[in-house]
Image (cartoon, rainbow, N blue to C red):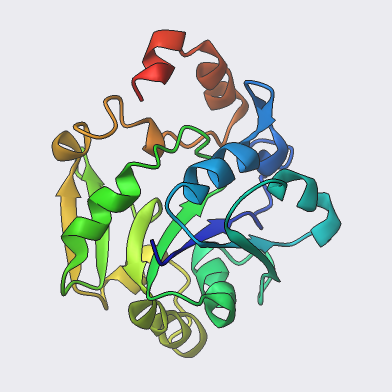
Length: 208
């Protein structure tokens, strides 16, 4: 598919205390798990970083997608800044955006969202009444609005950005057809949540 995956890997990881991209799960880094998931359906992956590129290159070996690195335009200013920073590198009109702390990302979500986007600007999950602007699918033209929201309006939240878009919401119950336990939206951003990840039963991981 002509889809660009964008991985937001430039955060401070303050709550975790170490870079989440390189935390290990089943002998692979979180970043590697996410890259392998995106590689199934994306022909380009843009990785937004704040450290030296050579720290990440070993995680990108033997992938079929074109891999592009870009530094945050405004370091440590949040995910909307990461999206804004990636724009100049994105070559496709469909863009799947993911954080680096969801190592259980189910790649089958990507074609599922592609089928739903039609004339919408984005396909966004609504899980138990909570909007999930990451691990969501966008059109590149809609992402261009991040410049207006972030740089001109001075708003840094993804929710402020979404207010400008024509969004297709997907209910969590519908998503369970693809991702039984909704683990694609399990963000591992604290030591406690990391331990919870490590405690997930193997049969649950296979069905996620």
